[in-house]
Length: 163
Length: 340
Ligand SMILES: NC(=O)c1ccc[n+]([C@@H]2O[C@H](COP(=O)([O-])OP(=O)(O)OC[C@H]3O[C@@H](n4cnc5c(N)ncnc54)[C@H](OP(=O)(O)O)[C@@H]3O)[C@@H](O)[C@H]2O)c1
Image (cartoon, rainbow over all chains, first blue to last red; front, side, top):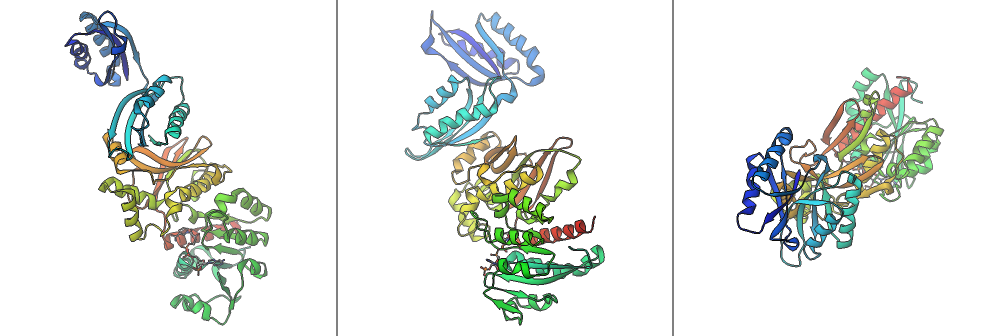
Protein backbone atom coordinates (compact mmCIF):
# COMPACT_ATOMS: atom_id res chain seq x y z
CA UNK A 1 0.00 0.00 0.00
CA UNK A 2 1.25 3.50 -0.87
CA UNK A 3 0.32 6.49 1.29
CA UNK A 4 0.29 9.97 -0.07
CA UNK A 5 -0.23 13.11 1.94
CA UNK A 6 -0.90 16.22 -0.13
CA UNK A 7 -2.46 19.65 0.21
CA UNK A 8 -5.24 20.41 -2.24
CA UNK A 9 -6.88 23.78 -2.97
CA UNK A 10 -10.47 23.78 -1.73
CA UNK A 11 -11.97 24.13 -5.20
CA UNK A 12 -14.08 21.76 -7.29
CA UNK A 13 -12.12 19.39 -9.50
CA UNK A 14 -8.89 19.38 -7.52
CA UNK A 15 -9.40 15.81 -6.27
CA UNK A 16 -9.77 14.60 -9.86
CA UNK A 17 -6.47 16.27 -10.69
CA UNK A 18 -4.86 14.37 -7.82
CA UNK A 19 -6.36 11.02 -8.80
CA UNK A 20 -5.47 11.23 -12.52
CA UNK A 21 -1.68 10.62 -12.31
CA UNK A 22 -2.25 7.84 -9.81
CA UNK A 23 -4.78 5.86 -11.83
CA UNK A 24 -3.02 6.59 -15.13
CA UNK A 25 0.09 4.92 -13.67
CA UNK A 26 -1.61 1.74 -12.52
CA UNK A 27 -2.59 2.81 -8.99
CA UNK A 28 -5.61 1.08 -7.50
CA UNK A 29 -7.09 3.63 -5.11
CA UNK A 30 -8.33 2.24 -1.80
CA UNK A 31 -9.23 5.35 0.13
CA UNK A 32 -9.25 9.13 0.35
CA UNK A 33 -9.54 11.17 3.53
CA UNK A 34 -10.07 14.95 3.57
CA UNK A 35 -8.95 16.75 6.74
CA UNK A 36 -11.39 19.66 6.45
CA UNK A 37 -10.75 20.52 10.09
CA UNK A 38 -7.11 21.27 9.23
CA UNK A 39 -7.87 23.62 6.33
CA UNK A 40 -5.39 26.49 6.12
CA UNK A 41 -4.93 29.17 3.42
CA UNK A 42 -7.70 27.48 1.45
CA UNK A 43 -5.60 24.29 1.34
CA UNK A 44 -6.97 21.04 2.71
CA UNK A 45 -4.64 18.21 3.78
CA UNK A 46 -5.71 15.05 1.97
CA UNK A 47 -4.55 11.46 2.57
CA UNK A 48 -4.89 9.03 -0.26
CA UNK A 49 -3.82 5.41 -0.26
CA UNK A 50 -3.54 3.07 -3.18
CA UNK A 51 -1.98 -0.18 -4.34
CA UNK A 52 0.58 -0.63 -7.08
CA UNK A 53 1.63 -3.99 -8.37
CA UNK A 54 4.95 -5.09 -6.86
CA UNK A 55 6.91 -4.93 -10.17
CA UNK A 56 5.68 -1.46 -11.06
CA UNK A 57 6.25 0.28 -7.75
CA UNK A 58 9.53 2.05 -8.47
CA UNK A 59 8.80 3.21 -12.00
CA UNK A 60 5.18 4.16 -11.34
CA UNK A 61 5.91 6.04 -8.15
CA UNK A 62 8.40 8.25 -9.97
CA UNK A 63 5.84 8.93 -12.71
CA UNK A 64 3.14 9.71 -10.16
CA UNK A 65 5.40 12.14 -8.29
CA UNK A 66 6.30 13.84 -11.54
CA UNK A 67 2.63 14.07 -12.52
CA UNK A 68 1.74 15.70 -9.20
CA UNK A 69 4.56 18.24 -9.44
CA UNK A 70 3.47 19.15 -12.98
CA UNK A 71 -0.02 19.81 -11.60
CA UNK A 72 1.41 21.95 -8.82
CA UNK A 73 0.01 19.68 -6.17
CA UNK A 74 1.80 20.17 -2.88
CA UNK A 75 3.26 16.82 -1.85
CA UNK A 76 3.81 16.43 1.90
CA UNK A 77 4.73 12.78 2.28
CA UNK A 78 4.83 9.57 0.35
CA UNK A 79 5.41 6.22 2.01
CA UNK A 80 5.33 2.59 0.95
CA UNK A 81 3.80 0.14 3.41
CA UNK A 82 4.78 -3.50 3.60
CA UNK A 83 2.25 -6.00 2.31
CA UNK A 84 2.89 -8.26 5.27
CA UNK A 85 1.77 -5.60 7.67
CA UNK A 86 -1.91 -5.92 6.88
CA UNK A 87 -4.72 -7.70 8.60
CA UNK A 88 -8.33 -8.26 7.63
CA UNK A 89 -10.83 -8.88 10.38
CA UNK A 90 -14.53 -8.95 11.14
CA UNK A 91 -16.17 -7.41 14.18
CA UNK A 92 -19.62 -8.62 15.17
CA UNK A 93 -21.80 -7.11 17.89
CA UNK A 94 -23.17 -3.65 18.57
CA UNK A 95 -20.51 -2.27 16.26
CA UNK A 96 -22.33 1.03 15.57
CA UNK A 97 -23.91 1.58 18.97
CA UNK A 98 -20.44 1.29 20.47
CA UNK A 99 -19.22 4.08 18.17
CA UNK A 100 -17.35 2.79 15.14
CA UNK A 101 -15.67 6.18 14.64
CA UNK A 102 -14.19 5.89 18.09
CA UNK A 103 -13.01 2.35 17.26
CA UNK A 104 -11.26 3.61 14.12
CA UNK A 105 -9.76 6.61 15.92
CA UNK A 106 -8.42 4.42 18.69
CA UNK A 107 -6.75 2.17 16.15
CA UNK A 108 -5.42 5.24 14.37
CA UNK A 109 -3.94 6.57 17.60
CA UNK A 110 -1.76 3.43 17.65
CA UNK A 111 -0.83 4.03 14.01
CA UNK A 112 -3.11 1.24 12.82
CA UNK A 113 -4.68 2.58 9.64
CA UNK A 114 -8.07 1.36 8.49
CA UNK A 115 -7.70 0.92 4.74
CA UNK A 116 -11.08 -0.59 3.98
CA UNK A 117 -14.35 -1.03 5.79
CA UNK A 118 -17.56 -2.70 4.72
CA UNK A 119 -20.61 -3.08 6.88
CA UNK A 120 -23.82 -5.07 7.08
CA UNK A 121 -26.59 -3.25 8.84
CA UNK A 122 -29.43 -4.91 10.63
CA UNK A 123 -32.30 -3.43 12.57
CA UNK A 124 -31.32 -0.79 15.09
CA UNK A 125 -30.55 -2.57 18.39
CA UNK A 126 -29.63 -5.78 16.62
CA UNK A 127 -26.07 -6.92 16.15
CA UNK A 128 -24.21 -5.94 13.01
CA UNK A 129 -20.90 -6.84 11.45
CA UNK A 130 -18.09 -4.93 9.78
CA UNK A 131 -15.09 -6.19 7.90
CA UNK A 132 -11.96 -4.05 8.09
CA UNK A 133 -8.60 -4.17 6.43
CA UNK A 134 -5.90 -2.44 8.46
CA UNK A 135 -2.26 -1.71 7.98
CA UNK A 136 -0.04 -1.63 11.01
CA UNK A 137 3.41 -0.08 11.52
CA UNK A 138 6.63 -1.90 10.70
CA UNK A 139 7.68 -1.84 14.35
CA UNK A 140 4.45 -3.41 15.60
CA UNK A 141 4.19 -7.21 15.75
CA UNK A 142 1.03 -9.00 14.64
CA UNK A 143 0.64 -10.16 18.23
CA UNK A 144 0.70 -6.54 19.48
CA UNK A 145 -1.79 -5.52 16.80
CA UNK A 146 -4.20 -8.28 17.79
CA UNK A 147 -3.83 -7.30 21.43
CA UNK A 148 -4.82 -3.72 20.60
CA UNK A 149 -7.89 -4.85 18.65
CA UNK A 150 -8.88 -7.39 21.29
CA UNK A 151 -8.63 -4.74 24.01
CA UNK A 152 -11.22 -2.63 22.19
CA UNK A 153 -13.38 -5.68 21.46
CA UNK A 154 -13.39 -6.72 25.09
CA UNK A 155 -14.46 -3.26 26.20
CA UNK A 156 -17.18 -2.99 23.55
CA UNK A 157 -18.20 -6.64 23.73
CA UNK A 158 -17.47 -7.26 20.05
CA UNK A 159 -16.68 -10.66 18.55
CA UNK A 160 -13.39 -10.57 16.64
CA UNK A 161 -12.41 -12.88 13.77
CA UNK A 162 -9.22 -12.34 11.82
CA UNK A 163 -7.35 -13.56 8.80
CA UNK B 1 4.08 -58.98 26.62
CA UNK B 2 2.86 -59.83 23.12
CA UNK B 3 5.84 -62.16 22.67
CA UNK B 4 4.10 -65.30 21.41
CA UNK B 5 1.69 -65.99 18.59
CA UNK B 6 -1.19 -65.07 20.84
CA UNK B 7 -2.04 -61.54 21.93
CA UNK B 8 -4.59 -61.38 24.72
CA UNK B 9 -6.81 -58.34 24.85
CA UNK B 10 -9.72 -56.92 26.82
CA UNK B 11 -12.27 -54.36 25.69
CA UNK B 12 -13.84 -51.82 28.04
CA UNK B 13 -17.02 -50.30 26.62
CA UNK B 14 -18.89 -52.20 23.94
CA UNK B 15 -20.81 -49.35 22.35
CA UNK B 16 -20.52 -48.06 18.81
CA UNK B 17 -16.72 -47.96 18.57
CA UNK B 18 -16.19 -51.08 20.69
CA UNK B 19 -18.62 -53.17 18.62
CA UNK B 20 -17.17 -51.90 15.32
CA UNK B 21 -13.73 -52.83 16.59
CA UNK B 22 -14.83 -56.39 17.34
CA UNK B 23 -16.43 -56.66 13.90
CA UNK B 24 -13.26 -55.41 12.25
CA UNK B 25 -11.15 -57.77 14.31
CA UNK B 26 -13.33 -60.68 13.22
CA UNK B 27 -13.09 -59.59 9.60
CA UNK B 28 -9.34 -59.09 9.64
CA UNK B 29 -8.31 -61.98 11.86
CA UNK B 30 -6.96 -64.14 9.03
CA UNK B 31 -5.22 -61.20 7.47
CA UNK B 32 -3.53 -60.36 10.79
CA UNK B 33 -2.44 -63.96 11.26
CA UNK B 34 -0.94 -64.16 7.77
CA UNK B 35 0.65 -60.72 7.61
CA UNK B 36 1.64 -60.08 11.21
CA UNK B 37 1.89 -63.58 12.55
CA UNK B 38 -0.30 -63.29 15.62
CA UNK B 39 -3.75 -64.24 16.86
CA UNK B 40 -5.86 -61.89 18.87
CA UNK B 41 -7.64 -63.53 21.78
CA UNK B 42 -10.42 -61.48 23.34
CA UNK B 43 -10.41 -62.45 27.00
CA UNK B 44 -12.79 -59.91 28.52
CA UNK B 45 -15.43 -57.34 27.66
CA UNK B 46 -16.44 -54.84 30.32
CA UNK B 47 -19.66 -52.90 30.19
CA UNK B 48 -21.06 -50.37 32.65
CA UNK B 49 -23.03 -53.11 34.44
CA UNK B 50 -20.79 -56.14 34.35
CA UNK B 51 -18.27 -58.19 32.40
CA UNK B 52 -17.91 -61.18 30.15
CA UNK B 53 -14.67 -62.96 31.00
CA UNK B 54 -13.50 -66.12 29.25
CA UNK B 55 -9.84 -67.02 29.49
CA UNK B 56 -10.21 -69.42 26.57
CA UNK B 57 -11.27 -66.55 24.36
CA UNK B 58 -14.71 -65.09 23.69
CA UNK B 59 -16.40 -66.49 20.59
CA UNK B 60 -16.69 -63.41 18.35
CA UNK B 61 -19.02 -65.06 15.82
CA UNK B 62 -21.59 -65.90 18.45
CA UNK B 63 -21.31 -62.53 20.15
CA UNK B 64 -21.60 -60.47 16.99
CA UNK B 65 -24.52 -62.53 15.64
CA UNK B 66 -26.62 -60.92 18.31
CA UNK B 67 -25.15 -58.37 20.68
CA UNK B 68 -27.70 -59.22 23.35
CA UNK B 69 -25.77 -62.50 23.65
CA UNK B 70 -23.25 -60.53 25.73
CA UNK B 71 -25.33 -60.59 28.88
CA UNK B 72 -26.82 -64.04 28.13
CA UNK B 73 -23.40 -65.69 27.98
CA UNK B 74 -22.67 -68.25 30.72
CA UNK B 75 -19.53 -66.31 31.70
CA UNK B 76 -21.31 -62.97 32.15
CA UNK B 77 -20.82 -61.54 35.65
CA UNK B 78 -23.16 -58.74 36.69
CA UNK B 79 -22.25 -55.70 38.74
CA UNK B 80 -18.49 -55.83 38.42
CA UNK B 81 -16.28 -52.93 37.40
CA UNK B 82 -13.33 -52.98 35.05
CA UNK B 83 -11.08 -51.13 37.49
CA UNK B 84 -11.60 -53.87 40.11
CA UNK B 85 -10.84 -56.78 37.79
CA UNK B 86 -8.11 -55.60 35.40
CA UNK B 87 -5.40 -56.68 37.85
CA UNK B 88 -6.79 -60.23 37.91
CA UNK B 89 -6.68 -60.71 34.13
CA UNK B 90 -3.90 -62.28 32.12
CA UNK B 91 -3.87 -59.81 29.20
CA UNK B 92 -1.38 -57.94 27.04
CA UNK B 93 -3.45 -55.02 25.79
CA UNK B 94 -6.43 -53.17 27.20
CA UNK B 95 -8.69 -51.35 24.74
CA UNK B 96 -10.64 -48.48 26.29
CA UNK B 97 -13.75 -47.24 24.43
CA UNK B 98 -16.08 -45.95 27.13
CA UNK B 99 -17.71 -42.52 26.87
CA UNK B 100 -15.70 -39.54 28.12
CA UNK B 101 -16.55 -37.24 30.96
CA UNK B 102 -14.99 -34.12 29.43
CA UNK B 103 -14.02 -32.55 32.75
CA UNK B 104 -12.65 -35.53 34.66
CA UNK B 105 -11.69 -38.01 31.95
CA UNK B 106 -13.50 -40.72 33.93
CA UNK B 107 -14.11 -43.60 33.91
CA UNK B 108 -11.46 -43.99 31.20
CA UNK B 109 -8.70 -42.34 33.21
CA UNK B 110 -9.03 -44.89 36.03
CA UNK B 111 -9.16 -47.76 33.52
CA UNK B 112 -6.02 -46.54 31.77
CA UNK B 113 -4.11 -46.04 35.03
CA UNK B 114 -5.21 -49.42 36.35
CA UNK B 115 -4.06 -51.17 33.18
CA UNK B 116 -0.69 -49.41 33.18
CA UNK B 117 -0.16 -50.12 36.87
CA UNK B 118 -0.59 -53.78 35.98
CA UNK B 119 1.93 -53.54 33.13
CA UNK B 120 -0.73 -53.81 30.44
CA UNK B 121 -0.36 -51.79 27.22
CA UNK B 122 -3.28 -49.46 26.50
CA UNK B 123 -5.20 -48.33 23.44
CA UNK B 124 -7.87 -45.69 23.94
CA UNK B 125 -10.38 -43.82 21.81
CA UNK B 126 -11.09 -41.48 24.72
CA UNK B 127 -9.77 -37.95 24.39
CA UNK B 128 -10.35 -36.52 27.83
CA UNK B 129 -7.73 -38.48 29.81
CA UNK B 130 -5.11 -37.29 27.32
CA UNK B 131 -6.05 -33.61 27.05
CA UNK B 132 -6.40 -33.42 30.83
CA UNK B 133 -3.52 -35.60 32.07
CA UNK B 134 -1.26 -36.27 29.11
CA UNK B 135 2.00 -36.01 31.03
CA UNK B 136 0.84 -38.08 33.99
CA UNK B 137 -0.28 -40.91 31.70
CA UNK B 138 2.93 -40.84 29.66
CA UNK B 139 5.06 -40.78 32.82
CA UNK B 140 3.19 -43.73 34.28
CA UNK B 141 3.48 -45.65 31.02
CA UNK B 142 7.20 -44.99 30.94
CA UNK B 143 7.62 -46.02 34.57
CA UNK B 144 5.75 -49.27 33.95
CA UNK B 145 7.50 -49.83 30.60
CA UNK B 146 4.14 -49.82 28.81
CA UNK B 147 2.92 -48.50 25.50
CA UNK B 148 -0.10 -46.18 25.24
CA UNK B 149 -1.72 -45.46 21.89
CA UNK B 150 -4.67 -43.23 21.10
CA UNK B 151 -4.80 -42.59 17.35
CA UNK B 152 -8.63 -42.67 17.32
CA UNK B 153 -8.85 -39.67 19.67
CA UNK B 154 -7.92 -37.19 16.91
CA UNK B 155 -9.72 -37.34 13.55
CA UNK B 156 -10.43 -41.07 13.97
CA UNK B 157 -8.62 -43.03 11.28
CA UNK B 158 -6.85 -40.07 9.65
CA UNK B 159 -3.27 -40.84 10.73
CA UNK B 160 -2.87 -37.50 12.47
CA UNK B 161 -0.74 -38.90 15.28
CA UNK B 162 1.04 -41.76 13.59
CA UNK B 163 2.25 -39.52 10.75
CA UNK B 164 4.88 -38.46 13.26
CA UNK B 165 6.97 -41.52 12.54
CA UNK B 166 6.90 -40.73 8.82
CA UNK B 167 8.26 -37.27 9.52
CA UNK B 168 11.08 -38.08 11.94
CA UNK B 169 13.59 -36.68 9.47
CA UNK B 170 11.75 -33.38 9.35
CA UNK B 171 10.66 -30.75 11.88
CA UNK B 172 7.02 -29.78 12.33
CA UNK B 173 6.78 -26.10 13.17
CA UNK B 174 3.05 -25.42 13.14
CA UNK B 175 -0.26 -27.24 13.11
CA UNK B 176 -3.45 -25.77 11.63
CA UNK B 177 -6.41 -28.06 11.67
CA UNK B 178 -10.14 -28.49 11.38
CA UNK B 179 -10.85 -31.04 14.07
CA UNK B 180 -14.58 -30.89 14.55
CA UNK B 181 -16.75 -32.18 11.73
CA UNK B 182 -19.95 -30.84 13.30
CA UNK B 183 -18.67 -27.27 13.31
CA UNK B 184 -17.26 -27.56 9.82
CA UNK B 185 -20.61 -28.86 8.59
CA UNK B 186 -22.49 -25.99 10.26
CA UNK B 187 -20.15 -23.33 8.84
CA UNK B 188 -20.17 -24.90 5.37
CA UNK B 189 -23.97 -24.80 5.33
CA UNK B 190 -24.13 -21.25 6.67
CA UNK B 191 -21.69 -20.16 3.94
CA UNK B 192 -23.36 -21.86 0.99
CA UNK B 193 -26.99 -21.39 2.01
CA UNK B 194 -26.84 -18.12 3.92
CA UNK B 195 -28.74 -19.73 6.81
CA UNK B 196 -28.36 -18.79 10.47
CA UNK B 197 -26.28 -20.70 12.99
CA UNK B 198 -29.34 -22.11 14.75
CA UNK B 199 -30.93 -23.36 11.52
CA UNK B 200 -27.67 -25.00 10.43
CA UNK B 201 -27.26 -26.59 13.87
CA UNK B 202 -30.78 -27.99 13.79
CA UNK B 203 -30.11 -29.45 10.35
CA UNK B 204 -26.86 -31.03 11.61
CA UNK B 205 -28.76 -32.56 14.53
CA UNK B 206 -31.45 -33.96 12.24
CA UNK B 207 -28.79 -35.58 10.07
CA UNK B 208 -27.02 -37.04 13.11
CA UNK B 209 -23.90 -34.88 12.65
CA UNK B 210 -24.48 -33.02 15.91
CA UNK B 211 -25.39 -34.33 19.36
CA UNK B 212 -28.64 -33.42 21.10
CA UNK B 213 -26.45 -31.37 23.44
CA UNK B 214 -23.90 -29.91 21.03
CA UNK B 215 -22.16 -27.69 23.62
CA UNK B 216 -18.80 -29.46 23.54
CA UNK B 217 -18.58 -29.13 19.77
CA UNK B 218 -19.89 -25.63 19.16
CA UNK B 219 -18.02 -24.13 22.12
CA UNK B 220 -14.73 -25.33 20.59
CA UNK B 221 -13.90 -27.52 23.62
CA UNK B 222 -13.86 -30.76 21.62
CA UNK B 223 -11.47 -29.34 19.01
CA UNK B 224 -9.33 -27.85 21.78
CA UNK B 225 -8.94 -31.27 23.42
CA UNK B 226 -7.83 -32.81 20.14
CA UNK B 227 -5.43 -29.93 19.50
CA UNK B 228 -3.76 -30.53 22.87
CA UNK B 229 -3.20 -34.19 22.00
CA UNK B 230 -1.85 -33.34 18.55
CA UNK B 231 0.54 -30.66 19.73
CA UNK B 232 1.83 -32.82 22.57
CA UNK B 233 2.42 -35.72 20.22
CA UNK B 234 3.69 -33.92 17.13
CA UNK B 235 5.44 -30.90 18.59
CA UNK B 236 6.64 -32.53 21.79
CA UNK B 237 4.75 -30.09 24.02
CA UNK B 238 3.30 -30.88 27.40
CA UNK B 239 0.05 -28.92 27.39
CA UNK B 240 -3.39 -29.50 28.78
CA UNK B 241 -6.76 -28.08 27.79
CA UNK B 242 -6.46 -25.12 30.17
CA UNK B 243 -3.63 -23.86 27.96
CA UNK B 244 -5.91 -23.41 24.94
CA UNK B 245 -7.47 -20.06 24.07
CA UNK B 246 -10.91 -21.18 22.90
CA UNK B 247 -13.63 -19.40 20.92
CA UNK B 248 -16.62 -21.29 19.54
CA UNK B 249 -18.76 -20.74 16.48
CA UNK B 250 -22.04 -19.59 18.04
CA UNK B 251 -21.41 -15.88 17.38
CA UNK B 252 -20.83 -16.25 13.65
CA UNK B 253 -23.66 -14.62 11.74
CA UNK B 254 -24.75 -14.92 8.09
CA UNK B 255 -23.79 -11.23 7.77
CA UNK B 256 -20.26 -11.92 8.88
CA UNK B 257 -19.99 -14.73 6.34
CA UNK B 258 -21.32 -12.43 3.61
CA UNK B 259 -18.83 -9.71 4.51
CA UNK B 260 -16.01 -12.23 4.42
CA UNK B 261 -16.95 -13.04 0.81
CA UNK B 262 -16.28 -9.42 -0.26
CA UNK B 263 -12.58 -10.03 0.21
CA UNK B 264 -12.75 -13.63 -0.97
CA UNK B 265 -12.63 -15.09 2.50
CA UNK B 266 -14.62 -17.84 4.18
CA UNK B 267 -14.84 -18.44 7.92
CA UNK B 268 -13.38 -21.69 9.24
CA UNK B 269 -13.14 -22.95 12.80
CA UNK B 270 -9.42 -23.58 13.10
CA UNK B 271 -7.31 -25.26 15.75
CA UNK B 272 -3.82 -23.80 15.69
CA UNK B 273 -0.61 -24.76 17.50
CA UNK B 274 2.08 -22.20 16.82
CA UNK B 275 4.92 -20.54 18.72
CA UNK B 276 4.02 -22.28 21.96
CA UNK B 277 0.39 -21.09 21.74
CA UNK B 278 -2.74 -23.14 21.34
CA UNK B 279 -5.74 -21.42 19.79
CA UNK B 280 -9.16 -22.66 18.67
CA UNK B 281 -11.20 -19.93 16.99
CA UNK B 282 -13.04 -18.94 13.84
CA UNK B 283 -10.60 -17.49 11.30
CA UNK B 284 -10.88 -15.82 7.92
CA UNK B 285 -9.40 -18.15 5.33
CA UNK B 286 -9.06 -17.39 1.62
CA UNK B 287 -11.69 -19.18 -0.44
CA UNK B 288 -9.04 -20.93 -2.56
CA UNK B 289 -7.06 -22.08 0.49
CA UNK B 290 -6.64 -25.81 0.99
CA UNK B 291 -8.07 -25.28 4.46
CA UNK B 292 -11.45 -24.53 2.90
CA UNK B 293 -12.86 -28.07 3.12
CA UNK B 294 -16.58 -28.73 3.13
CA UNK B 295 -19.00 -30.76 5.19
CA UNK B 296 -18.04 -32.99 8.08
CA UNK B 297 -14.47 -33.60 6.95
CA UNK B 298 -11.46 -33.07 9.20
CA UNK B 299 -8.17 -31.59 8.04
CA UNK B 300 -4.71 -31.42 9.56
CA UNK B 301 -2.06 -29.19 8.01
CA UNK B 302 1.48 -29.67 9.25
CA UNK B 303 3.92 -26.91 8.40
CA UNK B 304 7.31 -28.55 8.15
CA UNK B 305 10.75 -27.02 8.09
CA UNK B 306 12.06 -28.98 5.13
CA UNK B 307 9.01 -29.87 3.05
CA UNK B 308 6.55 -27.01 3.36
CA UNK B 309 3.03 -27.91 4.22
CA UNK B 310 1.65 -31.45 4.41
CA UNK B 311 -2.10 -31.92 4.58
CA UNK B 312 -4.21 -34.84 5.76
CA UNK B 313 -7.95 -34.84 5.06
CA UNK B 314 -10.56 -37.41 5.98
CA UNK B 315 -13.58 -38.44 7.97
CA UNK B 316 -13.07 -37.49 11.59
CA UNK B 317 -15.75 -39.67 13.14
CA UNK B 318 -17.64 -42.91 12.75
CA UNK B 319 -17.53 -46.27 14.47
CA UNK B 320 -15.52 -48.16 11.86
CA UNK B 321 -13.18 -45.23 11.28
CA UNK B 322 -12.32 -45.17 14.99
CA UNK B 323 -12.19 -48.97 15.09
CA UNK B 324 -9.66 -49.15 12.28
CA UNK B 325 -7.47 -46.61 14.09
CA UNK B 326 -7.64 -48.87 17.16
CA UNK B 327 -6.67 -51.90 15.08
CA UNK B 328 -3.74 -49.91 13.67
CA UNK B 329 -2.62 -49.11 17.20
CA UNK B 330 -2.96 -52.76 18.17
CA UNK B 331 -0.83 -54.01 15.29
CA UNK B 332 1.80 -51.35 15.88
CA UNK B 333 2.01 -52.24 19.60
CA UNK B 334 2.51 -55.90 18.76
CA UNK B 335 5.15 -55.04 16.16
CA UNK B 336 6.97 -52.80 18.61
CA UNK B 337 6.87 -55.43 21.35
CA UNK B 338 8.45 -57.84 18.92
CA UNK B 339 11.24 -55.42 18.16
CA UNK B 340 10.11 -54.11 14.76
N1 LIG C 1 -18.23 -42.72 17.68
C1 LIG C 1 -17.18 -42.17 17.06
O1 LIG C 1 -17.25 -41.85 15.88
C2 LIG C 1 -15.90 -41.95 17.81
C3 LIG C 1 -14.73 -41.64 17.10
C4 LIG C 1 -13.54 -41.47 17.81
C5 LIG C 1 -13.54 -41.58 19.18
N2 LIG C 1 -14.69 -41.83 19.85
C6 LIG C 1 -14.65 -41.94 21.31
O2 LIG C 1 -14.74 -43.32 21.66
C7 LIG C 1 -15.45 -43.47 22.88
C8 LIG C 1 -16.63 -44.40 22.67
O3 LIG C 1 -17.49 -43.86 21.71
P1 LIG C 1 -18.81 -44.60 21.24
O4 LIG C 1 -19.38 -43.82 20.13
O5 LIG C 1 -18.55 -46.04 21.04
O6 LIG C 1 -19.74 -44.41 22.54
P2 LIG C 1 -20.96 -45.32 23.00
O7 LIG C 1 -21.64 -45.88 21.81
O8 LIG C 1 -21.72 -44.54 23.99
O9 LIG C 1 -20.23 -46.55 23.73
C9 LIG C 1 -19.68 -46.52 24.99
C10 LIG C 1 -19.92 -47.84 25.67
O10 LIG C 1 -19.27 -47.86 26.94
C11 LIG C 1 -20.19 -48.35 27.91
N3 LIG C 1 -19.82 -47.86 29.24
C12 LIG C 1 -20.23 -46.74 29.88
N4 LIG C 1 -19.64 -46.64 31.09
C13 LIG C 1 -18.86 -47.72 31.22
C14 LIG C 1 -18.03 -48.23 32.26
N5 LIG C 1 -17.85 -47.56 33.40
N6 LIG C 1 -17.39 -49.40 32.07
C15 LIG C 1 -17.53 -50.10 30.92
N7 LIG C 1 -18.32 -49.67 29.91
C16 LIG C 1 -18.97 -48.52 30.05
C17 LIG C 1 -21.52 -47.84 27.42
O11 LIG C 1 -22.58 -48.52 27.99
P3 LIG C 1 -24.04 -47.79 28.03
O12 LIG C 1 -24.27 -47.18 26.71
O13 LIG C 1 -24.95 -48.90 28.33
O14 LIG C 1 -23.91 -46.76 29.11
C18 LIG C 1 -21.41 -48.11 25.94
O15 LIG C 1 -21.69 -49.43 25.63
C19 LIG C 1 -15.86 -42.07 23.31
O16 LIG C 1 -14.93 -41.58 24.22
C20 LIG C 1 -15.81 -41.28 22.03
O17 LIG C 1 -15.51 -39.92 22.27
C21 LIG C 1 -15.88 -42.04 19.19
